[in-house]
Every structure is written in structure tokens, then in C-alpha cells.
Image (cartoon, rainbow, N blue to C red; front, side):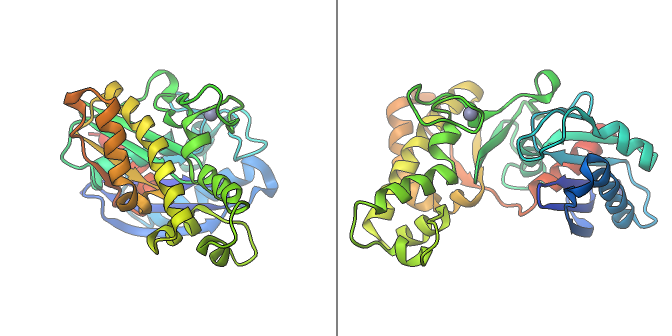
Amino acid sequence: MKKAIGIDLGKTELRAALVDETGRVQAHKKIKTDRANGPEGVTAQLGWLAKEVRASQDVAGVGVCAPGPLNSETGTVLDPPTLPGWKNVELRALLEAQLGMPVMVNNDANAAAYGEWRFGRGRGCRHMVFVMVSTSIGGGVVNDGRLLLGRGGFAAEIGHMCIATDGPTCNCGHCGCWESLASGTALAKFAEEAVREVQSSLMIQLANGGPICAHHVGVAAEQDDPLALALVHEEARYLGIGLVNLLHLYAPEIVVMGGGVSTCLPLMRQVIDEIVGKHAMPCYRSTPVERAELTEPGVLGAAALVLDAAV
Ligand SMILES: [Zn+2]
């Protein structure tokens, strides 16, 4: 059975797995990202990890998923905000020289979408949109059984769809992006603002003197804290508006939602359905929105992209 190595290049952690074509993980290893020695140091770590999980196995190649923006055609990491100092790093060429085997580099959200499609909640579908709602919003689109890449692999930056031109400033520098209104970071910020107006809320107790995070909002909402519930419903409204756009653009059979905020999906479903029912054209309305299944979709997707390219 064919195997490939998937590696997630994260800001704080590097995770690698040897994955077979059924999605089974045969070896797994993770280490802390040592950013002290810049891209060269991290690339050396990636090469070491690949050799560790490979053992003596015959593998088709290595798939790396890394923070965008990156050019997946050339395997170049451009200048991601989460990896300071990584400007125009030829990651694919560096790793191929180190390992002597084919390397593919994809943006982490696209790789995660592919992983959920091949091995997770989207398997068996031809058309899927993956939405990752965590500290930021990322995602990917599988259309006609293929990952939508676009020029340079830059497609599907869904977090930067403009939802409100007068909205908050986004990490990308523009205003009113979906991410600036509906990410976990945005939910936490709205929660901080909201608790200033009230005497008590379970969210304040859960934060225990620290900042309120999206997780606190979700937990408090599950326990019927009225303010937390209102925040989660507002979150659902913003998510719903973005989903309406995605349904119209890509006509998926399913929307798969991952990330920490997706744990609130049961509490958000009614509002999302209302927004979709109100703003989407009739033939798009019945598209299910389901929670993602995989814990490491990026690693699995990066490996699957190598396996499928080598068919
Ligand atoms: Zn943005």
C-alpha cells in the first residue's frame, strides 16, 4: 500500500505522520518549532522529522502544509504573518535537496480541506467547502473531486471575504473581512466588550480573572448563560452570512466546519439556518453544515495530496 509523509509546519509545533492511502497513520512525531535559527533551522527540523517517521518505509514523497500566503506551484513560503522572517523561502527546493524525494508544499487550510474530504466528514462527496473557524478563518474548496487551487494555490482565502465594509480591521489590514467578524478571536473580543456592560456572567467566572476566550463563550452558552447565548447567536449570524456567499459561489453538497468555534454548531444551527433561508436562493438552502471529523486534517491532507499526485 502506498504511503506518504505529511508534515504540519506550525508556529509553535511541527507535526509529522506517515500516512497510507486509506488515511491510516502508521507513525507520528511532533516537536516544538525552534524559530531561533530562522527558516534554515526549521527546515532542518522538518527534514529530521520526515526521516524519523519514514523509518525504512518506501514512501511516495513528503507533503508539507504551512501558513499562507504561499505559492504551492513553486513551493515558496512568501511572508506569512505567523512566521516572521520567512520571506520568499524556497521550502520545497530546500527540503527536496535535504531528503532526496519529491516534496509538495500547500497552504495549511487547503491541505486541511483536502484531508477532511479524503478521510473525514467530506469523504464520498464531489463538492465540499471546508471552513476552519478558530483564531482566524481559513478554508478550502473541493470542486468536481479536485482541490481548488487557483493561481499559485492562492484560492479559497474565505476568511478575507468582505462581509461589512465598515467592519473591524482584519489581520490582513482591510476592514470587515469574515475573519474580523466571525473568528474565535472576534467572538472573544465581542465577549470582552459585552461583559463590561453587565454585573455578572458565567463567562467572567470561567475566565477567572484572565481574558475571555471563545471557548469560555461556548461553555457558558451551553449552560444557558444569556449573554453568552446572545454572543453565540450573533456569531452564528456572521457565520451564516459568509456561508450564504460560499453556497452561492461553490454549490457544495456539504459544508464541513472545523476549528474550536465549530463546537458551538449545535447552538448556532437554528440561526445559521435562518440566515441561509433568508439570503440564499432556494436551491442552495438545504446544504448540510456538519462538524469536521479529523484532529489533524492538515497533516493527513498534505500526505494525501502527495499520494493522489503520484497515482
Ligand atoms: Zn482580512
